[in-house]
Image 1 (spheres, helix red, strand yellow):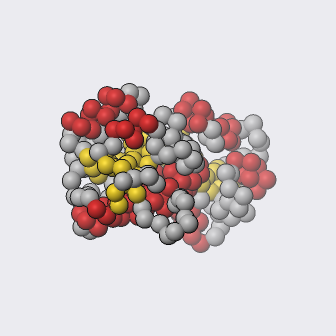
Image 2 (spheres, helix red, strand yellow; image 1 turned 90 degrees about the vertical axis):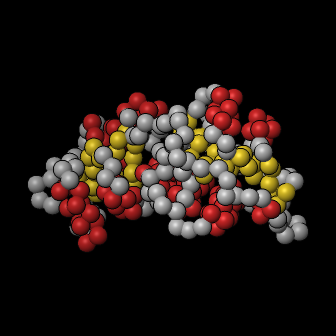
Image 3 (tube, rainbow, N blue to C red; image 1 turned 120 degrees about the vertical axis):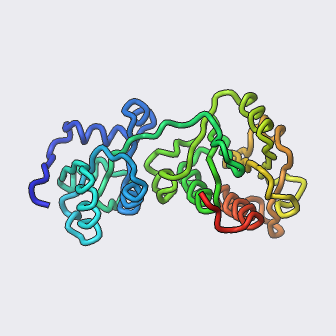
Length: 271
């Protein structure tokens, strides 16, 4: 890796941009987001994602897997910069970083449901980026066509959500909307059945037809679905639990329900 430029100042423009991407405002203003770690970097390369540049910790980039990855990125003309460990740590979002950060182009969030979509997921005010990322990972694996985000959701492109998604953030289309009523009308016009997941649901999740066009709706970790979406649901369904159990983590519930849907529809789903 001889010849790569070395950055030693916290005031360097690349370092300052990387640090700003830990905030939602920084991502919005710059049009970029941060991908940290080997797995996300490999996924970005496989997805042919546009990468502005990479930042490398000088103590780690010589490891075989890292070396091969960096070479592949360099062949794609991705600029690289090396930083001393102390400076790199200031940018990293994890305590034990793997020594690679990619600054990547932030995608434009769509306001439209993909044309052929028939399996959607709505995240309503999910505040925990780790939960949101885990749900995205499962959604992509189970064949969900798009993730719908209401206002107040965690940012799927935050460092924590992106890591928890294990690359699904680079694959799963995200849709965001401002007008709940208009979006509900769009779903109804497209023939989607609205399934709400809630502990007080009147029916079991395995008692309904999951092969028709549908959208699963998951609410905030503490309060559940907002009144608007709960009232709009075609069915409110629950997961049976052992006596004495009060709740289940929203990401775990999503995994069960999305895979139950995929099982009824059959695997694998062609994309």
